[in-house]
Image (cartoon, rainbow, N blue to C red):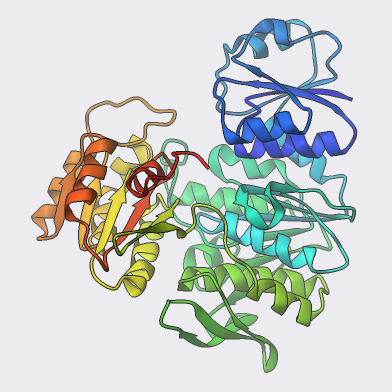
Length: 454
């Protein structure tokens, strides 16, 4: 099998390429950028071309896989079509791979997908069923974003954007939560609920859904579903109930999980915040229902150290601790800021780069309220991603709106300006948190004198 990946440097595409290489396929691909992920592929003897040229596409290819980020007029994609080659979008191919595994697990939700996927991977790694797993972030415990196992267990993050997760037919589907997001694709919350319900109906008969019952949006989407649903959460009407939660001085939680009157286990996490309790309990339920021994679940979840860019500690300078987080939705921003407040000894300084104009505009007021959880807020320009600036929303507008509420917000015209502000104003005991799915992490790393990329 000879497979070519257009846009091979993405977090999911690179993982698929490695899985294919492990299956014995001939693998190559292209990308416009050079990244650490590209270098890791090259180190695994995967041929990677810089840039997209039609000459890279040859008649001997059995399959061409492309990412949704690739434009329809991409010359490699056009050449593959002209040659009549088999072509699959990334999510379609991931769905095809998933079918090869008897015990497939797909993790969906507006928030927490990556951490939950990594937690489940760690638990199964501690069991007798070493999984194959594809994670939407770098997980240091497995040395990257992909795990190559030898069992029938396949674990994958299932993204809802452009309904990608509707290409999957897992045995177990997990829904961590459900909120309005991706307004450039989903017109409203009702459409998102419809998509998540369809995802749930695609779980194989004999399989089941594990979902957070504390979210009314989730329960509404799954009402009267013709699949078994196990709900988890703090509410006592859930199938698995979280009890006895407490936090240490560093905001790390301890808690118990019950199924009815039966104690499943007592746990203490290394990762911080209530949102990670939810992620952990989804993972515990998945492993428990998959018959992983409870003692292995406990040891694996308690040793879980987190995923890159999820409240990740970067270092300290002159008594100022610096963290970074991928949060880019108001709910995520609020949750991580509230957790950071518990850790900070003095002021909390948030450095936020909004992600996409459509999300910033659609959830504008929610962002204003969420960011007010910090003492000082620095806003750098919106990360456009796939979008074009139409001039109707900006980080400067956000800063002005936050200031009108009496908080201390500053628009930063450049990353250098943000670093200079931190150099002049951050004092011992402060906690700096860079936030966003774009490149804001570079500000914290530059402030600490670290290289921009790991």
